[in-house]
Length: 247
Image (cartoon, rainbow, N blue to C red; front, top):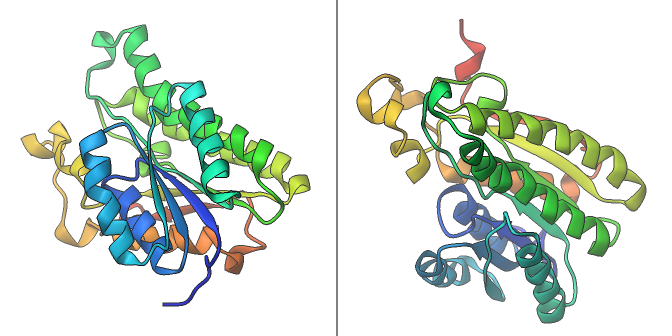
């Protein structure tokens, strides 16, 4: 493995499990110092030694609810105090709930939007305020941004809005030397996939060939966050094994 992130500092939100943990371990294996962000303290503490073992020179766990702006500010301030710099932000934290449209409340919508969309905005805002030229932001949206299934309207809407946030961030970040790109994972072998009641009930059936690994997604995150992608700005990268390409 090369050292594309040697001496660089990366914040990974939702970093204690699934895609976030895989991304943290991948960047760690390439020399990054990692700020692991999650709202679950037990999961966060369990993830830290895994990221160290993957090769991270330093790991700082930050307990943070990404939907609360001052907690995001504190995480970024702590990152700068602890490491002295910020080079990469991976906006991966996400929340999904399952309800028919007619049963959803305004609070249901706000709960999802606050995490899945505003959380990414808060970290992007802090990145714009604190990153130096050469920084990179990778947003983790979902295939639900372009094609979805029943019972997840707030999640699908939030992920679609994340594509628009990425475009705006790419436009406004260009003059700052900060790149922003977004990935759209499909069915990935994570707890979020298997907790989906549509999957558990059999209403949605997945072929094994259509289920990717978190490491598959982490590899694309690492590319987009690295200088190898220096001319990639505002891109939307679908990672679904070609599932949506079929009729």
